[in-house]
Picture 1 (cartoon, protein in one colour):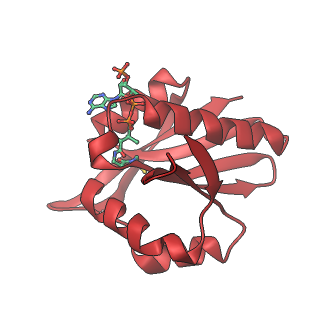
Picture 2 (picture 1 turned 60 degrees about the vertical axis):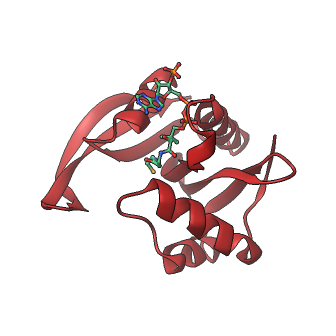
Length: 145
Ligand SMILES: CC(C)(COP(=O)(O)OP(=O)(O)OC[C@H]1O[C@@H](n2cnc3c(N)ncnc32)[C@H](O)[C@@H]1OP(=O)(O)O)[C@@H](O)C(=O)NCCC(=O)NCCS
């Protein structure tokens, strides 16, 4: 497995994964905006295929985890944990000691991943996300690295 920077040539595959694993996926524009910003956008691959990706936004002394996704056929094999571990290493390499994220209250898989990695709940944003039936709350989580 290897980690490399995402680029515009990855967009078709990133969008294929994004649309297949999220009920409310990012748009292509969200990813291109991230690529054109200060965000750190990384692709995780095994030489043959893309396994997943992560988008991180550094803000002074914090790193916000904006998106982490593993392709449907590769989930529950420890890839998400490894990719999150790589993201934490990136943060440490930038001398950042705190990671933050928001997660849907219904996202059991992501909540399990983050708790296992040492994140803890520090707040709730009511109605933060669009949902099929109105809005959904976000749990705010942090991890001190
Ligand atoms: C969240 C996600 C990245 C996890 O990736 P993954 O490779 O499947 O996760 P791992 O195999 O490393 O699992 C790590 C831990 O997460 C939890 N977990 C992962 N999938 C789970 C599921 N479907 N149900 C419950 N817990 C789950 C477990 O605690 C798991 O540890 P365990 O296997 O020892 O029980 C993946 O499910 C995904 O891409 N989901 C869609 C995108 C998304 O919701 N991203 C997060 C918000 S941006």
